[in-house]
Amino acid sequence: MSRNAKEGSELYEKLFNENINLVFLKEPHINTEIYRQALETKVPLTGNNVDLILEGINKYLMVLAEEQIQLAFDQSEKEVLDLRQRTREGMKTASLNGKQIGIKKGTKLVTKKSIKAKDIILKKSRTFNGNNTDEEVMKLAGIAQGTYYKYKHELIEEQIESIR
Image 1 (cartoon, one colour):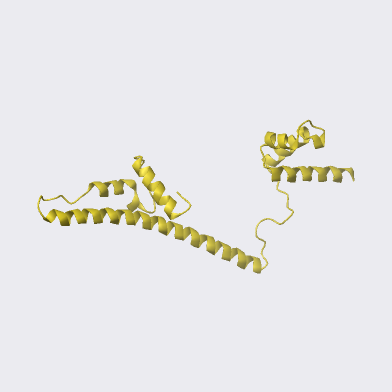
Image 2 (cartoon, helix red, strand yellow):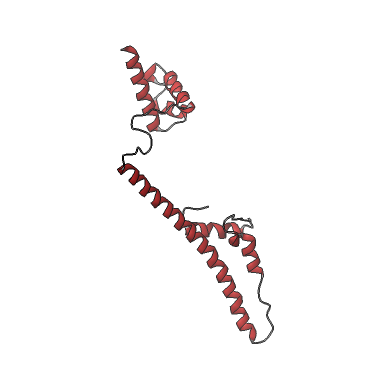
């Protein structure tokens, strides 16, 4: 729902105020419906001096509900950070044991998108007798600058290899 606990709490409050119902499968105690009930459920006042104590109890229940929401987001953030740390440690251990992490350097992946983009580069780029600049071809192909130049370099290498 968010990148960190603070952002999650703020978003929760914003969506709650917009009457959007949030349902948390693993944390049902912070569903907006439960929070809304906590806001509406107050100890009834009696009309005498005991009301001072009852108002304090009502305020305490509200603070308790807000703390539970914050605690749930804090716990979620901690779990994500722990998972990232364990992943880094696992990758480091695997690397130290000689395991390949990710694809090998220099490996060329062929995807439908790369085939389509390379086709556009071949037909449209001035480098390959087209009429468009590199920037125009990037937009036509819908690819980033780094990807464009990587594909263009691969196409040039393929042409050189086919001549040999």
